Length: 385
Image (cartoon, rainbow, N blue to C red):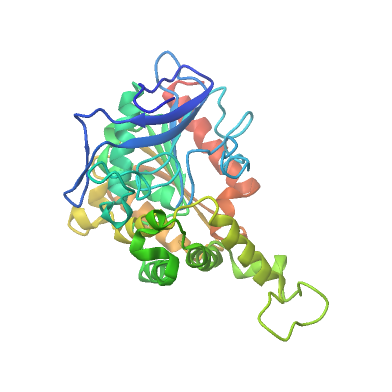
């Protein structure tokens, strides 16, 4: 759907870019406002007559709205084809699935690369700071425009899981169920540190140009690639890296230099170089900062349970992975304890796997079974059959 058009739930696969009405700017936690504002989104399936089968899918740090359809930039399949599709836990034959690109992103939603209406040039660092709550606020406006009063479910992993928690805190009346995967109620000092390394790599690249690289006709590709390499290590586990690469050499013999001697080095370099083709460096700065600012309890007197006090009518499912050291199981248990303290109904499972944080993107039978079981139970309670 083109910018400016009303979003429609009528087609099997749809979406496009929705422009917020001129009289409805997005008001940000920083005190700034964004207008005009556009949100890139995709839909899969049809909204039923009672409008009770809608599921919002929230993406992780470098994701986008192409959750179950080919990414037009990369030509690669959707990033959550393991979960969304015929016969999958989220089935377009039964669910109306909405996936959006977050505010600050670079796949159709307004972000640092968008045109600043005051200057006619890309925002760059003039783009205001954003938060997870701002992302959710924009999603809520889109869901309202789609004519959906209550979502059957909101689901996401990693940063997507944080958006799920924010939805439960800010819009519990609009949720029937919520699935938080491999996430945390706040960003830890370790995670902030990893993000700072990535940001400094980008800003140290001479082609970053103080954030004005588009006007200069260059891109900080080397810095962004290094940022991606560093972050990607945190998405894996030591066991997974050892199983996939060990100390295997890329070629016969050592180079006795600084070429990629080891297969794991070559893998990380590939991850970095392929990433720069699909992601904007300034968006990476802003979205990682939004993650760093995330602390759900902070605006509720420092007590996480208070964030969920109004969400007692929501059915929760919290899932973690045993080898995830980015958002370890202990942080998921903190979420579950807070939900229980708030009187919420919550189920929890730690999935045994050595695939690390990224396990929710991969073929993991126990994870698949947990999602199927929860959605089946919630559908029965919702009267969806």
